[in-house]
Amino acid sequence: MNTILVLPVVIPFAAAAVNLLFNGNSGREHRISILGALLHFAACAALFVRVYSSGMQTMQVGNWPAPFGITLAADHLSAVMVIVTAILGLAVTVYSRAEIKSDLLAAGYYPLLHILLGGVSGAFLTGDLFNLYVWFEVMLMASFGLLVLGREKQQFDGGVKYVMINLFSTLLFITGIGLLYGMTGTLNLADLHLAVQKVDNQALLTATAAIFMTAFGIKAGMFPLFFWLPASYHTPPVAVSAILAGLLTKVGVYALIRIFSLVFIFDMAHTHGLLLIAAVATMFTGVLGAAGYNEFRRILSVHIVSQVGYMVLGLSLFTPLALTGAVFFLLHNMIVKSNLFLISGVSARISGTFELKQLGGLYNNHRFLALLFFVSAFSLAGFPPLSGFWAKLILVRAGLETGAYIAAGAAVVVGLLTAYSMTKIWGEAFWKPEPAGKSAEKGRPDVWMLLPVSVLAILTMVIGLLPGPFLAVAEQAAHELTHPEIYVNAVLGGK
Image (tube, rainbow, N blue to C red; front, side, top):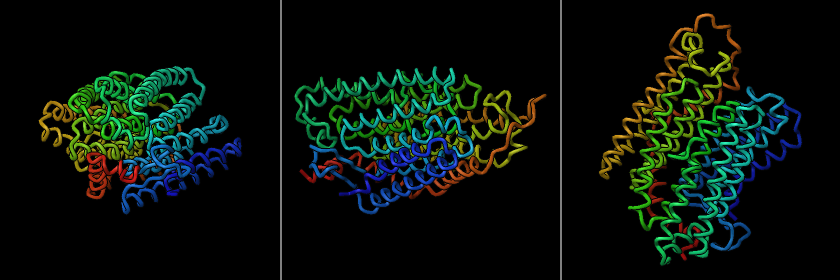
């Protein structure tokens, strides 16, 4: 029993259960949650080290042999995703110590947060489609609960849009599962890789691939069904916005990468061609949509869409270099995007607003915060030598090498437009003087806010200044994705 694969899922659920026992005792809830997040990080780090040193890890739950039982599997891509999930979970849990007050604690904030972390970890580690569906549902319930936790009208409005479009995605997902099972008789991902090669009805198989592409595309926030995202992510507490921004759409991207590198690789000219078109449309839609907003979190929310386009671009090109760029971009973006949301919360704590027109003077009065924003924002835009520069450079180079010149050019242009949005936030919130007649500062950020923001910014700089080890992991993940027999042999034992 390779129990190290179970711990990243079990620990968050255990933390949620213990938190429920102490509901109403805010001090204990904070301490239990931080301890749970630390243990989750330790388990995910141990799994990452195991995969990095010993290769892909698998476990058959209950000792039922694959493909008949429940399979847990961790290759380099899964290991990267769970360790970043744990880092973000710990950062947001520490940040929550300063932001989340007793009313939200009593409503179940910490149990929902830990259930979300457990669901995300389960989605990254599951080895079959039905359990991926189960983990998606766990994530949907927990994230919806977090979105409407404050019970405000704006939160319910955004939450309803979020849950309705995601329920539609779930309907498509379960429909695709039924069709695929009917054609192959299996839902184990490794077994599916072999089974789809024996299906005679290739037209139905391609149609099923399109269903999965739409279902996972909605989860990822791809064009054109992404409107739920900017309508909802700016409404909850900042800690909730940060964890949702860092994780939820990335689970959709992960699902796309996994299934379109392992299962649906029989008609790549069609499926990956559609993904390429969707990637370019997603990049432009997100970055142009952000230009119309003047609220800190709304700009960041819409930019999630454009960044998803870069990740899907790497999948659509499907070369070792392109997939390396996609994995590296995932690693970089999950950290940077979550940190920018946390920084928006710090600025709102200081000024009492997220509206850029009412912000100002943060550079003169809070230079350390300005430095943290600068690192994260311009990494998102792709300024050298920050982490975003390397991620975009790899994807642009991959596009040029494969002859996808329009896509490569789109990646460059969208990067420049992203820089415009980040410059707008910098100019309005940090560089310009405080607006005339502005009231005194509403509050000052404490160490519980600045500590996680600082750590994530430092991690962003480390990835940018010392990209070698991170690129090596991304290259190994890409190698495994382009050689699916590695995954198949690890799960099925060479059958």
